Image (cartoon, rainbow, N blue to C red; front, top):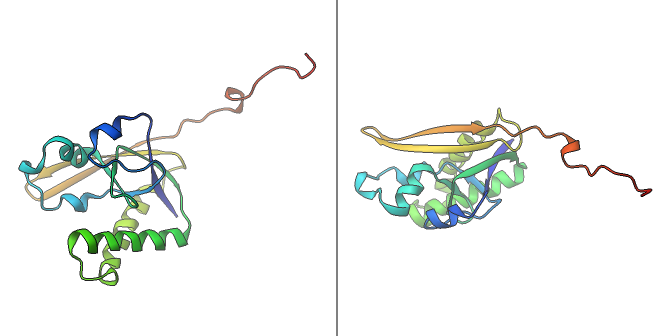
Length: 159
């Protein structure tokens, strides 16, 4: 199974999101956070989180890019519990047990997004408000193939 982890290429996420995700943490799209939003909610850093932020499962922070990677089944179970607890803490779910199916669906959706991509493929998300709710679109940036000679130091040990 594959999921995606937060990746940073520079410090911009630290400046554009109110709460940036930690590099390397597992992420889901996190569109659930915006289900009741209106145009009036879209200002400043909240607008940036809405427009293109993935949701970090450990911190609840946002990140612009995620990278596809393999995940172990035990990690998926722990992430499902973590997200279910988030639903209890921040959205009023009655219990972790009641929230687990919804959390599992969110993680399964992310796994579906990652399934057909090679490791290190980058994903971005773009959201917009529509009359019927939040619409998400996803974009992939394929990992670049790199030959070993790009990293090897050529020379002789006899010099």
